[in-house]
Image 1 (cartoon, rainbow, N blue to C red):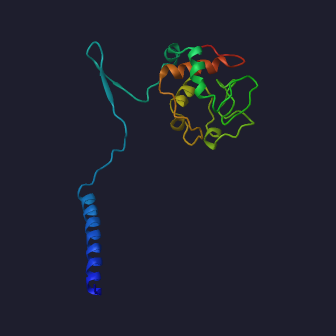
Image 2 (cartoon, rainbow, N blue to C red):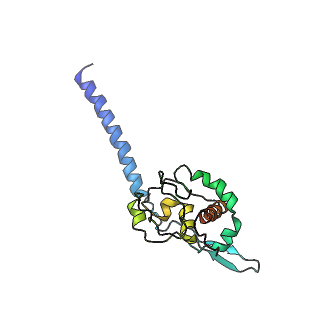
Image 3 (cartoon, rainbow, N blue to C red):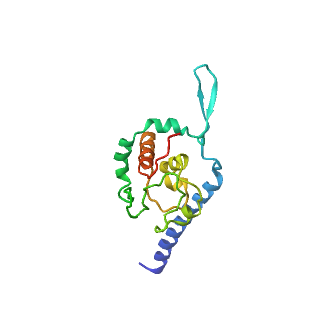
Amino acid sequence: MDSFEINKIIAAILVTVLIVLGIGKISDFMFAIDKPTVVAYKVEAVDEDGQVSSVSTDSKVDISALLAVGSVEHGQKVFKKCKACHSIKEGGGNNIGPKLWNVMFRPVGAISDYKYSKALLEYKKEWNWEEMNGFLIKPSKWIKGNKMGFAGLKNEKDRASVMLYLNENSNQPKALP
């Protein structure tokens, strides 16, 4: 095989690569897709009387109705998922996550002997019913940049039960709303 045949093989490979890349770029240009700026859908529901009402994804949760679904006993069972990282005992220490005794209605990032993420230290809110509910749904989405790697509790009964259980594990449990 002489050098002329090797040159033809290399040229054929290069031309093929250029054609494939060129077709890809040209098709991207010809079939450009405008991505939506809002990633959500407006859901409309028909009431019993035939009226159309829209349902928002950002609507306020009725905490009293949510808590009515849960129970402390069920919360104790669901909390087993949390025990891998958190202590709930009175006088218990911090684990991977901070101790959760008296967590309800205390400021976010208030345990002095635990190293919180910067996001939690800057959050400056209190763990009330609404905050805890939102956080338990998906911690990484509720407070962006926190270091809690938990996926969240999608089930309303599970979330309500865990909140009731956390409230009971306190020096002074708060009255339910």
